Length: 318
Image 1 (cartoon, rainbow, N blue to C red):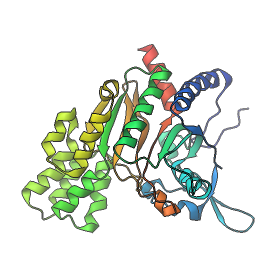
Image 2: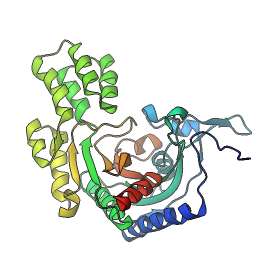
Image 3: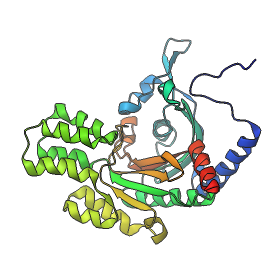
Image 4: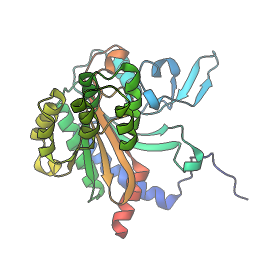
């Protein structure tokens, strides 16, 4: 008789575990080389701590009570716990602060879709280093880590979480309609986006920009097609700071947004043709630390180690 595991979880047996360990050790070596110290935080956090962050669609959903009746939640990611650590344990430490982690995160998923509830992540958080310099460091560490695992065909989609909100502000989109537009954009439903924009009474030029700009993807040249907006200028400055091998991995994606509400600037995703879902995600969250008592800019990323393993296997078979 085989007893089942909870939906969205799985056992990892020794042969696969050895392969996952090789991947994480390669990544750990890169993190160490760049001065990122490994950190471990509890899988459980008080809900009141997580509520300080604007998780948006990424809110924690697994709840329980401690012996005093306070609500505990399983962490959604490591960014918020590390923000808590910085505010409490590093309140007077001189920035920048560099943290690395290898930890499980817990997500609410629809069981019929076969998505994991428990995800093993490897990532970094760079606290106290402003844009674009800090973002350039994070992207460089990301590429070096992926290179160390042997992944060959990956690309990084790069955009700005602030670009589309600024377009909506410029166009005069009513506050009540903005979440709907962002929702269509997050699911890459450009037909739905065009329909929603068409329902608004906007000048034709602005309506066209709200539909066309987020569909722009490509090299650095696409930045010149959207004018001199400040968020685009920051992407140009970021690109100029990167080494040539990192630049070669980039695809500018001006429709890239994030459902987690705390992202403020550059955001990025890792893609590989051997896998149909992002291997990792990251970005800037310059306002989050202030909600925990220490106002510092920050940037980070998380790699889904299981997806990275699948992509590596797919490339080997290809």
